[in-house]
Length: 445
Image 1 (spheres, helix red, strand yellow):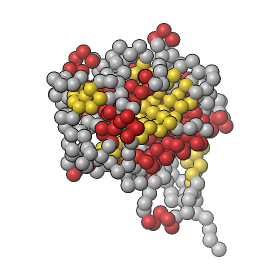
Image 2: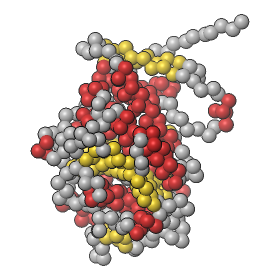
Image 3: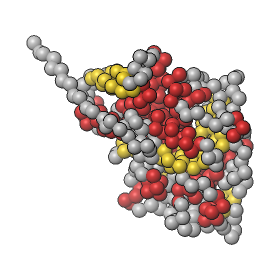
Image 4: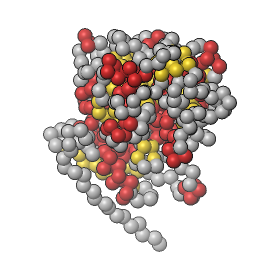
């Protein structure tokens, strides 16, 4: 006769947070869960204020990644982890509702989906496999994906995306999922960088800097998860997810330094660094969002620069936007969701000259790497919708927050559903979403 031995572990989070951190301390909470959770079924009880419940739920979801190739994992049965909340503070009398649970579950599942895609090696998660993952989410939501791939990209003028991905065995692709409710008054496009592996191309990376480049699809993965969650939670505006999928490979067909590409915007780009490929595929993606989707708000998200980690660190993504009002809104959404973000200088008149070319409209890599690299890289993307674009453009560089150690974090899902939470039917997201500026600013929801 066996006896069940139960044990309890109590952990305390810091009582205060600095103004640029989340009050929920999600990174500490994730570490706490990962360090102390037993191997079998368990229950996590979170004691917090109501405003911190969503970020706490997202943090716990990040503690349970799904991808593993460890052979020992096959012998371990699946386990059930139950999460309960005990609310304190001024709103403790407003309980977690079944609708709140539905919201947290949809977002948590999407965070784990995103993390799985980023964790998987390119041998499994190549462009064709990623397209299948996108279409699978589309099928789940009742949406038919639009797929433009291979030579069709070249024929239709997607010179950046085609130029980056044409050397790989699996072809590059532009994939679009569109949610278009009848009540919509705005059109929003989320554009994701989906480089499933980045060797650097002919400007090849050093062997020590190439490991981990399977994560270069983190922007596209985050947008896929966020789109899935947003649609499930009743997004009320037109929402398009645009995925720019390619493998930056070395081969006889690879784009060379000195080649000149014509992007979907019609602008020409002299390639001086094939390892600056993400901006090329996103240049095509945002131009498509403007020209074909007629988007009022265009947000691109990407693991774009190593400089991002130097500028804003391991936990905060970098934000570049043409509308000042988005800066505080994104900071608030980051603190409420746990996906932290911080703004960068937006000065095209000071920085875009770094891309000047004697032969084309621009080069794809800067002359001076000491001059606001994160801002410059984002400006290259923004130039393909034009600096006179009347709508709103946001660029989120999340190269460092995409992972923590050897594991993906699912970054971006919680940020986007919170930032655009006012367009969700979820009262939980509406309550923590920032108030966006009035309609005359050009982008209210």
